[in-house]
Amino acid sequence: MSTVDLSPGTLFASRYEVRRVLGRGGMSTVFEAHDNEREELVALKVLSADLSLLPEMERRFASEIPAAARIRQANVCHIYDWGPEDGLRYIAMEHVAGDDLGQTLLRHGAFTIDTAFELAIQLARGVQALHAAGILHRDIKPKNVMRGADGQVRIMDFDIAKHCVDGQDVAHEAGFGTPEYASPEQACGEPVDFRSDIYSLGVVIFELFTGRVPFRASTSVETVRLHLHAPVPLEGPDAPPLPRALVPVLRRTLAKSRDERYKTVKGLAEALRLARSVTPPEELARRAAEAVGVSPTAPTVARSLPALLSALNPKDQTVRWTPKEGPPRLDTKTRLAIAALLDSLDREEAAGAEPRASGIRALLQALNDENDSVRQDAAVALTKMLGKAR
Image (cartoon, rainbow, N blue to C red; front, top):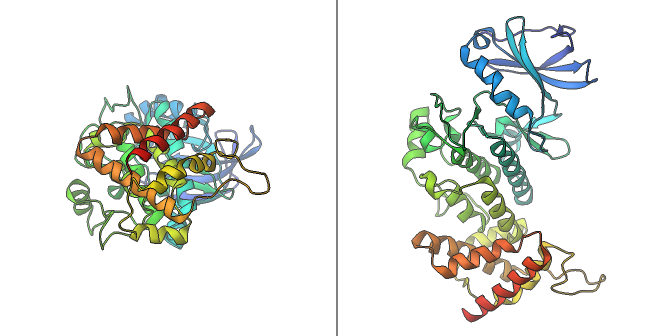
């Protein structure tokens, strides 16, 4: 397919003054342009002439693009305008000054642990907004995520996105985006649902922390085979260093069977926030990943839960302190014990979801509840529950 060439100064669609090329691919070209109606810079994506003529593009511009344009969430690139013009189809969207995450990872490698957690949570919020609008992205990868100078990320590129019914791709089409980020069901050519995006997001999160994808081979076919059959390198001598509390989150996110993954991105986002809250600073995280013999029901966990609650919300007065002292800090031993607890819950859940494991997990999630009394009750219940398990 031939790309589109618009020289600087060209007025496109009677309102977009082309400034320069931002990116070029086999199917489209993205220009920086000034929108004379909005009086601001936009990213103008113009599809190739061959692609613009496909009947499928007409359907997408009548369904997927309008649905995505209705989303107004900070982590989704805003679409302002779209349509046909001179035999071409275009999308005018928010201009984000910065690099995509793919370029950043290529240049600098993995992010720091704090930054990786923040980016992962932002991405989860963005995907959650897409799914709430009925949009299945189908090609979540770092190259399709812009990061502005303010650190905010925005998901973009809806070329193969689908508008779904109840999260199910009922009008399934061939093609699955990029092999390194494709879910097993995508790679097999099966109909997909929102859990496919969750898998792809898990691959991106893995890469944010490690600087590499979990599966990559010399050919696309071999890469697909790894997604289908190879275990995710989360533990063992060949696994890259990861925060201990993140391992069970990624294990569930990257499960081969979609039924074993998080059912919604909201659940993944909650798990990420909890994992971040118990992960030590970067220097201590390396020790946490190597730590052994920490009892998940150690008394230090029970003693620390009120402090954990206050650390999650400084306004909470479950543990009182003076302004001069500030909120209590979780020491390394406490963080390691809580991380070990999360890891043990994941194993127990996989083995049969014992009532104790399910109950503790629910209470841990309640520590992030917006209601003060819910958080306080959860802290008290956890303290009593773990105190009996010493």
